[in-house]
Image (tube, rainbow, N blue to C red; front, side, top):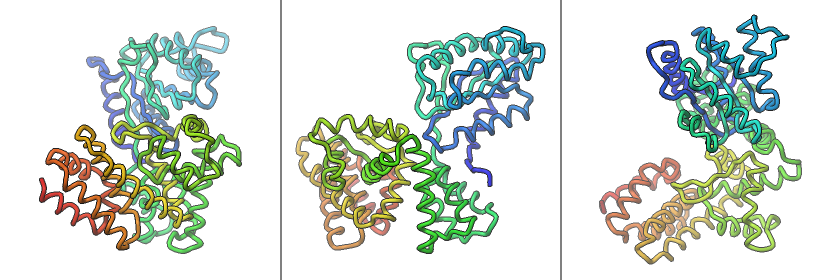
Length: 433
């Protein structure tokens, strides 16, 4: 079954650019579009769809997989130009830039560059020089894909013509639509479980859907274990940790499961989590934890990033949900203990902040306390934690309560985890606004 990623908004954006490209009276506002996102989010699939749109509109495409063989970018461009211009035969000595210029004299050209982030410094300079030389031609349009945002260094003539779009996980309705197209009819309960387990991350969604289509039922113990094993193998071992040794796969899998439980963390929390819950991974002293961030990104496909809005390090969201799923299903007691630890930690951090200048930090800690408490099973202790966190919110100034209410309204993950507590919390906050 064909992998599924609904990228209609992105394709509409590209089609609009194609219409401008084919209209001799208009100029492209953004001659370079970058689609950025983690591995497995659907970047290559999107380029394949764009390639189909090029052919449907008789636009000459040049599709280059930079990650496949970055040393032959120029040769591959020349090879593809020759398929469009037979006059450039094998004996013609020509550069990739001049070959593309010859094609541009005939008609518009769309260059599709996949996995540009895999190029080293020399290859990045080669790509930048090529773009700088060709972008002044109004019939030239470039689409790039990358796991990380591209800046093109100091080459402002290229950077100012680039617009970046971040690819996100797909929505529930699109996931449901895909599941209904499987060979075998799927119960609505199972259909909903595909999104609940994968959160619309295309690579995981495709793995789970194909397993269900082959007979695995996530509602049965065996079916659940089969699907979790496939997600571990296909998404984690062959995806995020594909470059790691077997020993490192096990080590970083534990660390990433641990770091997936908080939604944000700093170096202090990293150390606390490891020394309390994965002591075999502890370092000799506090300073030794600083290189761990780079080590994780080197091994795990740059999975960590600093989130300005959360003021902390985060695992890329679609992958965080997969690690979170695995730890919840495979190590429920460990998961619950860590959630309780994080709820108390954030409550204490919020309580310790007394100065008005840090009130926004206090509100953030309270929100994370609510989240981790909401993830706990229903007990009197959970109710007591929620009550303590709510008490802090109720003591804030109107401005700070408004900040909390605004962030709370946008926090879909927290609202979902709160369940039956959501309505009560909303009503109490509403009384103070």
